[in-house]
Each structure stands twice: as C-alpha cells, then as structure tokens.
Length: 526
Image 1 (cartoon, rainbow, N blue to C red):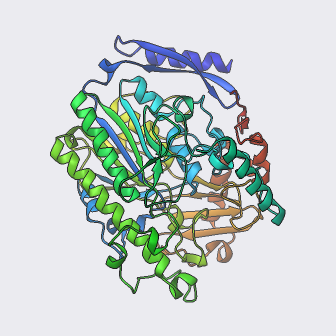
Image 2 (spheres, helix red, strand yellow):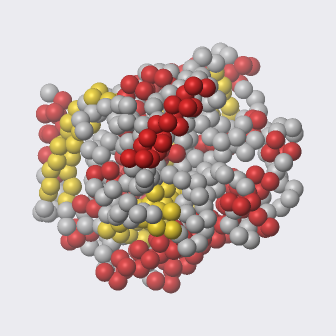
C-alpha cells in the first residue's frame, strides 16, 4: 500500500510537466524503496542559473560583521549580504562536521541518513543533491574537506571509552594505513555522491602544503594556504565551465578556522591583524583558559579573516567574468565554536555559539538585496530550496523544507520550530555520557529548549537573553512555554524516527568497517 501511494503521487506530479525525457529510479529510503525521478541532459540545464555553495568549517555566525562580530571585520561576506538575503535564524541542527555534511548532501535527518557522527561511510545508494543537478545537465564539482568517508578510522573500532581503547584505535589505524596508504582518498564513483569534478580530501588538519586528491590515489599539494588554494581551484573550475557554456553546481568547503589554532597554522600575515585585547561574550568566564591565553582564539579569527579575503576574490571573479548575474551563491558554515562561552570549547552543544551559523543567498535580480528574514533554516533545507529555485524536483526522501518561496518573496513560510540533536558523546566514536553528553532540543525564532539524556532540561529566551545566561527551565518549571515546547519536541522526534537513544546504541547501525547497515528507518542495502 505504501509503495502504491508513493508511485501514484509521483505519476500525478509528472503528468503536469512539459514533454521532456523522464528517468525513473527506485531509490532506497532507509529500509524501504521509493520512486524518484529526474530529467537528464544538457537541454534541461540550458538557461538555468549556476549554483555555488561555499560552506566554511567552524565559522560561527557572530564572527561575521553582519551578525554582530566585533573582533574582525568581514567586508566581503558583508558585500554578499548587501546583495542578497540574510537568514537571521540559520541553525546547525547537529553541530558536528559529518552530520552537517550528511544533511547538506541528502536533505535528511541524521537518523534517516545514518550519519550521526564523524568518520563513517555515507550510504552511496541514496539520492543526493549532486545527483539531481548532474542528471539535469549541470557539471557538478566538490572542492575541499569532504568528511563523508571512514578514512583512517576504517578499522579503528567503534568505541573509545577506556584507556585500552587508545592502543586498539592506533593499531587499527596503522593496519588500515598499511593496506591503504592514502586513507583520505575517495575514489570516483558512488562514494562521491554525484560529484564529477573532484579536488578534495576526506579529512586532515594540514593548512600549509595541504594535500588533496583528484581522480587517482596520489597526493596533490596546494600551492598556497588551504583556503586560498581552494578558492583558486573554484575560480578555475568556474572559468572552464563558462568557456564550455555549461551550467555548474559547485560546493567549496574550506577547513580553517577549524583547529589547530597555533601561529604556525595561520595564514601568513593574518595573526598580526588580530587585536590583542579580544572582545569576549559575557558568558565566557573570566578564568577560562582562552581568556587567560587568547592566542588560540586570535588564531581562530586570523583564519576567519583570511576566509573573508579569499571569498572576496571569488566574488570578484564572478563579477568580472559576467557569471555573477546568473549564479546563485550560498554562503554558510557547518557549525560554530564555543570559544569559551559557558566555559566550553568546540561544538556538539545546543548553545548559540555552536549552532548559530551564517547563511546568505544571492541571486541578482531574483532575490531582494540586503533583505533579512527570520524564518528558521536548517542544513537539510538547502537541497529542496536550491532545487526549488532552479526548477528541479527534489526527491521524496528529503526531510528539509523548500524555502525558495521565502527567498523569492512569493510565499510565506510558517515554521514554528526545528529539531536539534547531539547523538553521541564523542565526535569520532559511539560513546555515551562523556565529554559531550547526548541531548535533543528545538529552536524556535525566540526560544531554545534542550533535554539532556539524563533528563535535565534547559530553556532560554534568545530575545531577552541572547547569551543564554538564565535557564528558565529552573525558574519557570510549569510555564506554558515549557509545556508547549516539550510537546513539540516529542512531535519532531517522531517525525525524525528518533528514539533519543544513548550514543552507544548507534554502533549497531554500522559494521566493523563503519559501513552503514541500518538507520532508524530499517536495514540499508549496499
């Protein structure tokens, strides 16, 4: 009955399309198979806009001037904002590298894609955003950090709780390295999830003389600082597509300002531009190590400043080449960094510094210049939204919302809340209750509500208390707002088939080489 309903829906939708070549495919959705469709061939892409998505790693929203940043200026991000739509409420709903990338590529909740932590293999059989654009005649490309493969952790096991685990992990890494000297190489084919052009690596933190791969397991070395080199690669890719008169869909994913935050890891000449007396948020304790020794935080801002300059060169190329007029540009980030707020560093927590990310969309003549909108946007929304903007059909597997109407000013989007989550307590292993305890939460335009695995609750009014200093769940335990958000959280968890399991439970979703075998929807065929 389920399959019949899906098939009928698809046929009804296709009957309203103009006469074009239709390709139907059975796409695996968790434990089920559903019908998806796409059109193929360059004729379909003719006249459609190019799409450029740039997402920086660990760039929190308020590092940028337009979101209130005070430690550096970001004139090039501001320039894009003055020409496009700014989302005031862009939320990294699972603030961790691989889950974000999984949501971006699949449009699905991590519980549906299975990508709940780092260093796991994405299911190559699901239909992703690059598949849709490639099949519509776009030249697809990915440049930068991928992090949707198991890489060096392929045989490192799935847990890291005890001291004995460290030795086992190192032995597993060494064993896999001996078999596969280029552990961070992702070969052409299904594992690239629809991307044809490839100048990428799965993971590393080498920002000078950084290595990357193309279509052979041979390290290529970037000729300049990583972010600068990747922008150069992007410019060259777009130049070639312009000469070939072929529309492109390109994602660029620089790694800095991700740690390590050391002077030797900064781009030359940038640390000197960063003020010695950093301006700290009021929720950063006076005795926090970053306030006592601000050098790592200054390195963070040096890398972020370099990103802005490099991004500016990308915008300059679009303007001078004539591509800007017909190119949709999206600028965002995978998550932020706490930088000492609430006494914490890194990500994987529900607070504003980790989950608030920049999100700007520019399409000259089509979206309003300098407009701010409050609608909540998640990483899952980019897939259906970009499809909606260019007139392509996103697959039925997408959990995200098409926000193209909000961008174009043609449709009011009423979205009361989005689900947030941290599924495991270690970013690389299936652990529970350690440094980053598991939690679920929701964000509305005004409130953040969080429930931790141990049952503790937090509620913040982000308008009246933007630095989340007062936990209303303690002072207003029976408030109507808290009761309503508890109910809404339960509803959203049901939508995501999320049983709020401890992090150790998700180990069963993967085999011993970190290949996905099941999700919350059931077994996965490989």
